[in-house]
Length: 491
Ligand code: FRU
Image 1 (cartoon, protein in one colour):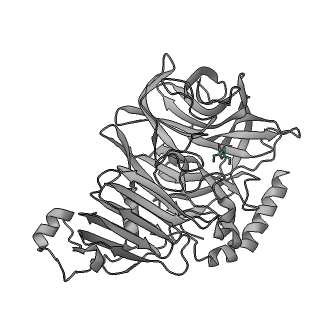
Image 2 (cartoon, helix red, strand yellow):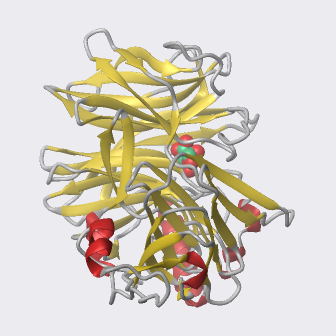
Image 3 (spheres, rainbow, N blue to C red):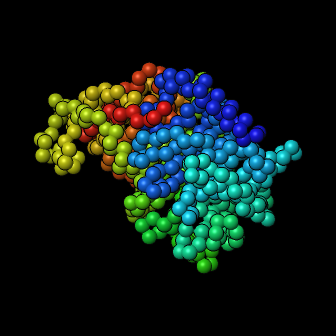
């Protein structure tokens, strides 16, 4: 479609559709969501001159995966985001069927976007170009055209460029499906972002000790964290296991060392980044203060998307909260970005009459702030619309979040359960290990559960009828702190 025409239609869709979207009781109060239409991957996440930019895959014209543009938000603090003009719309011959995912770098003082131009042919085949666009004085993005056609030996599925600077060069990873239907990550180098030299495959199905490991890998991201190299990737086609790989597609990471000279990445085993129901296509950036920050899409392609109730209000999907990454004991840890603490309202620690411990003991247990300590059974019901909850369980318990979701800890396994949107049956996700601390972030139709201060996360959408309340059950002692969270989206 012609660019101007698409943007005019998008404008109409937003103006007509926003009032309805804002009436949706499931619309988040503090997570990023599309004003109308469909959001998927975070793109081009960067902090430039102190300002955060987050672009995103956006279909402004409907809740299906068509017309993929790059939407654009900007924020000074990771909390309050402002809408910016659509950065990219699929209008050129090299991106006619979607301005697909990609990343941003600052080059010569300007934000430069590297994205995939997706092109489909009438016979059902497709090709892909890696393309550039550059920020103008007015904060608009000017397309500079393709810089890399489809590399030889691959299907039309080669996409999602993530670019970074190392020493005096630019490097890029791409997700790919080869001609034998094996998912791969390809590495390229360039001195100027325009001329790219292929350095070969650095990871994938059948490489570096991995056996058959999916037919396509999407959205790679490679960065150094606390001395190790981390390759994030999203393999498609992994067989479900009893407690793993239960989502339609997976998002995980490989930890290792990238040898830039040999273009070889030796790595350990693949680990999932999130043990919940909805998490995909995460992207990281290095903040100016040195933190490695991550946004993920709180959705999964082709996973019950048609059954999400928010479609009736003309929008679908949200981002995760921004997270800070660190490496501990050889594992990637994720914690909510510290900025999110600013959303906390007044702390409500209920003083349980039963089993209340002396304040000093509580303080040792919970750090300097005393909270509520009692039996799970005696805990009050808290409103979960937009809230943070921290719990230190000392034994088995279960928690229900309104009528829509339960979290159960039996001493060995954490189990998150909800009713399937498509067939009404219970569905589960699991995490195994010893739970010493839980931090739960609620936002109307989502929960993100941070286990043991970042050791694992479970992210999920859920659609409670009415305003959800927390109910706890169990006889074991449990310390609890609760904060309502202040809405902060600018709409
Ligand atoms: C991942 C993905 C990417 C692609 C984009 C299209 O969710 O399929 O591989 O670039 O979404 O919207």
